[in-house]
Amino acid sequence: MNSEYFFKENCYITEMHNTPEDPDVSIARVRVKPGATTNWHKLKHTTERYIIRNGEGLVEIGTNDPKVVSTGAVLVIPPNTLQRLCNTGSDDLIFLAVCTPRFIIENYE
Image 1 (cartoon, helix red, strand yellow):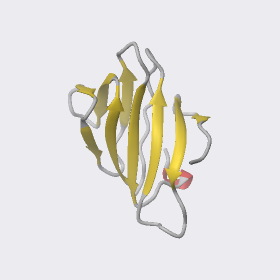
Image 2 (cartoon, rainbow, N blue to C red; image 1 turned 45 degrees about the horizontal axis):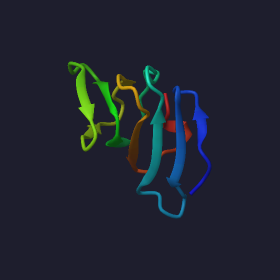
Image 3 (cartoon, one colour; image 1 turned 180 degrees about the vertical axis):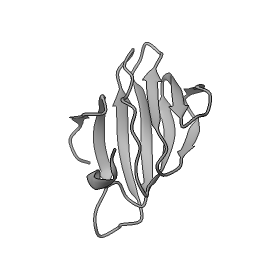
Image 4 (cartoon, rainbow, N blue to C red; image 1 turned 135 degrees about the vertical axis):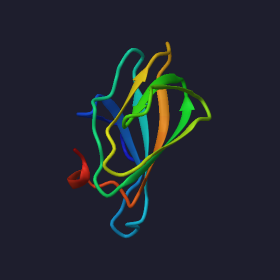
């Protein structure tokens, strides 16, 4: 597994699987500190799935009402859909981000 790094979205990323040899999927571990909110963003041509592994938060996806999420929740974010996630708990909010096709920075807005 690669080292964790801070991403401009206001979260910490550890790339678990993201390679041109497997263009259909990528998997990253994402960590959001208590009280932090990720920046509004969207991915062109890419569906994301968030699998909440630890913590609790409030997610906003597109024009849907904000939704409370906690350990075990699975969220599906369609391509080109604005999104952000706020850690409302006292522990790190940790989730897996599974992207299809794989995440490439050129698709990040």
